[in-house]
Structures are given as structure tokens and as C-alpha cells.
Length: 324
Ligand code: PBG
Image (cartoon, rainbow, N blue to C red):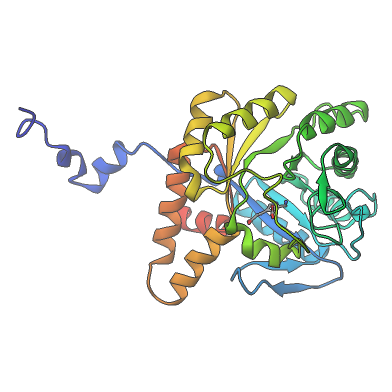
């Protein structure tokens, strides 16, 4: 007869005791802050569907990087919105590309901040798909060479970690080969290993101007209905040389985060994506939820599920809350 001997409420009776038995603690070190770089100078343009987020020019990103670093957030992940888009996304791997320029500027001014670059084609291609398109199909193998060139150009610019988000088969191996051949064998790869074809990316596509011009991404991103397939995707990426593996999105995919953490030994990242962020912002604006309480609960839950690292647009607010 467990009750009345067992009373779990005993350990909840006072804040001091609750703190002692708390299993999950968020720290600033958990966070990676995503930022969007756009051409120009002094540009800080609101992203309507993501209140509190901006498209910023490189000089503004440097200021943002200084702020983020001062707060104790260890890393940013950089997304580029190029001046020109074309069929083959050539701005993605140009040494003078927007991401390459911004990486150099940030590493010059804030060398202690870890700069991660998103490696993908969708922001740079005129059709908005994550690879080479032929006759309405996204081709896998011809895309690998472009992704490898893009990752190498990011490393040459000074990126500390590269993060392929395209979901082409074999891209981690292709990128690892290119980095090693270029003398960047010490640059880690954080792969978007289990990335689902999710409607939660909607606001990001406004932010990064990367909505596909036709069709959708279901021929390369994963089916939200699949759980075991995530293990296969992650295993392949680790075999190919991924140093950190990511599950994306986070909130509706906590089972996947948990499975990946249980199954593998490498660090696990989870991406608390744009749609997850915007829903919180919208409900808070309507006065229906307590924004910061919800944010801290969500982030704690993502960590509790198994994430070692959390990519989140809430990072700055969350760290301010932790520092209170
Ligand atoms: C690029 C990319 C996307 C996101 C990160 N990298 C969009 C997509 O796959 O369509 C989504 C991030 C977010 O929604 O916050 N491939």
C-alpha cells in the first residue's frame, strides 16, 4: 500500500526543496541563436510573422553578435538572404556571398562567439528548392557538389561549425570530404539529421524568402508520421561523419529527440522552429498565455526530452530570464 507512506508532494512543499530535486536545468550554454542576414548597411527589418526577429545587414549582425556574446549565449546560426537568386544558387558558394562576408565580419569583431552556418540551397535558388532542379524534380547527387562547395566556402570564411539542412542523401560525407581536402578537418558538422517536412517552417520562409516556387519539400524532408526512419537517418549521418545531429522541429517531435538521445552517443540538437515561436508570440499578444512562463516551459521540455543544444529564436529572452 504505497499511500500514505509515499507522498510525492513532500518534495514539492517548498521552493528550496523543489530546486534540490529538479532534474533539468537550462543554462545559456544550451542555446544557439538563429539570425538572418540581408544585403545593405544599417538594415534592421522586422519579420512580420516572427515578432522580435529581424532581417539584418552584416553590420547589424555584428552588433547583435556582440549583444548575444555578452549575454553568454555561445553560438549563432547564420541564414543568408542573397542579393540575387539563380537556378543553381551560385551566391551560396561564392566567396563574396552574403554569409561568407558576414562570417568574416563577426569572427573579426567577436572572435569568441561560435559562428555556425546553415548550409542549404533554398535561400539562393530562384525556384526555392534545396537542390538542383530538373524537369520539376530535385536531383540528389548533382546537389552534393554544390553543398560541399558551399560548406567549404563557409569554412574558408571562418565558420566554426557547418550545418547542412537540405536533407539530400550523402551530403554529410560529401561535405566532410570537401572540408578535409581543403584543410578544415577540425571544422565540425552539425547535420539536420532528422528534418521533417513540416508546416511549422512557414514563418521562416517569409524570414529567409525561401518558399518553394512550385510543389513542396516532401520528396526530401521526412514524413511527420515516421519515427523509426529518424533513427535510420541519424545513423547514416553519424556514419558519414556528423559530429552533432539535429532533430527538427522540436515541440511536436519530442519522441524523436528522446529516441535519438537514447540510441546514439553524439550530442543532440533540437530546432525550436519559426512556427513554434510565432504561435507563442501570437497567443501572448492576444493575452491568452504568459509568454515567458510558456517559453521557459517549452525550452525545459525540449532539454528534458534529450536535447543537448537548442536552436531557438527565444534564446535572448530566455537567457535574460535565466539571469534575473
Ligand atoms: C533551410 C532551412 C529551413 C529552416 C532551417 N533551414 C526551412 C525549410 O526547410 O523550408 C526552418 C527553420 C525554422 O522554421 O525556424 N532548408
